Length: 218
Image (cartoon, rainbow, N blue to C red; front, side, top):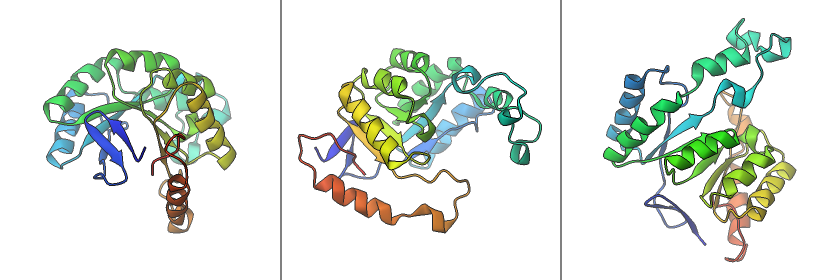
């Protein structure tokens, strides 16, 4: 298959680029601001919005250990505290998904644990995003694959072996549609680290696979 269907859109060779607006933590945990972000994305012509569905407990532990701080960037705050400030409140999901629908946009989310997947299933998301540092979270990949929804898989922090294992895990658990993203997980990324030429090589490899094989769509 040369494309993956996400909601009403076909994504892949021969189809228009799907432009996704990442909400990240820019909502500041204020629903009005989050809704404005959806409207701004729609006004700008964005095709879809993506949320991040997690709690601090999805990602880390409440600890004061030095390894739980990135002092050079975030000062004294622990990762648990930072994720607590950045999390999208679960009760915001329904109104944000509804606003996106009203504005003619697709809405989906990044899932970080199985409970998040189960919550998003209740809202009928058309696809799932997996962050690159969750690519090695194989139980999560199996749980997402069981929904039979398309998966957008980031690779920025993964080795080639980990990417292969992730794809094999998704396929074995029933996922047939994967969009594999070429990513660079340094922010901001130096031009020399981006390696955009890898996109052409990946595209050629995907073209050489048979239609019956599950493969990345770039």
